[in-house]
Image (cartoon, rainbow, N blue to C red):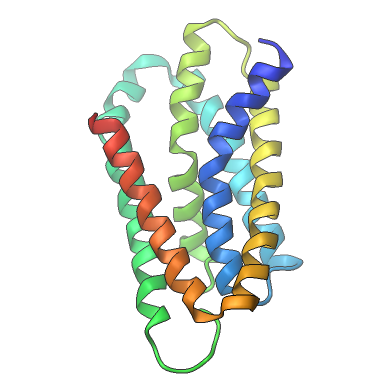
Length: 185
């Protein structure tokens, strides 16, 4: 598979990571260095690992996951998005009390934004494409798009304050709904 095809696949897979990073960046004032690194590293790592897992396990496990993957992604995104929306209505001018770049919230977001990459890995196995090169590109692009989303979201958050927390939560819910609708159609 040529570089440009892999890059287009990677950009498509990275859009969810970009949108989530946009939301996180808009609600956090401290996205640089450690929180930003954690988010970019985990999103890139999970985007790298999921195609490898999908490619490795073949059709048996992926067929089972395919019936539920969209619901899992929706549930994870709805949970985090709902918390952000709730916090946007709380009194006071503070950043989000729950840090989405730490603990299980970070893992949930990383899994939710990379589930589609599992199916891509399966598809690449069916096409008999070696997985390491595309997975590295997918992971690097996801990390880069995460950093870009954080930077843009942070600028918007500084300009619009708590309203961006509401927008970020709605974006996460929208991504979750898009995932479910695209799998049901």
